[in-house]
Length: 170
Image (cartoon, rainbow, N blue to C red; front, side, top):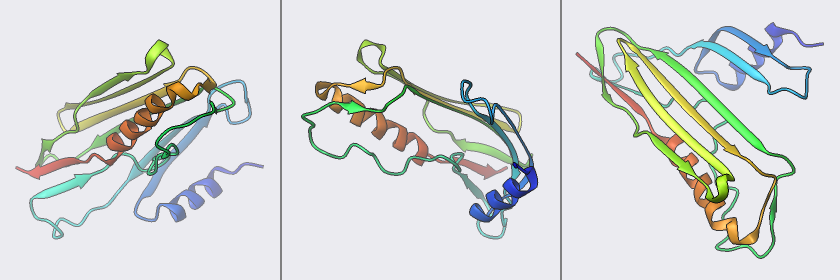
């Protein structure tokens, strides 16, 4: 039996630098539909730590830190077993006494033959930053001659997820 409170406690234990204010989900039991999770979190910061800047990495969960494709080349196909799609939409509300100093660069990448896409965009309205990252692989099996494209695709995801948003005190 799934209990929301247990999930929130486990999540806060794993990510002990944040507090979950609310969590909800859709399609947890329906495997034919994509799982959708929505978190409302708060991350406290100490203004004395740096009096002028706040650095934020919006990629807290499901972050890819290491490329699974690290061989220089491959002689056999990559079989994922299924098509993949990952979407992250984050909204960051920041204090009104700060302004955005740096946002990561927007990026759009397509793999040959529409076999995969990567879309990354940030937007600022008032004191709210929206971060949107979507990447998908549109086929299950990639041939060995497509390996370099797949490897670079994952390198780009990793680079995007390393980026920080920098806020500066007004």
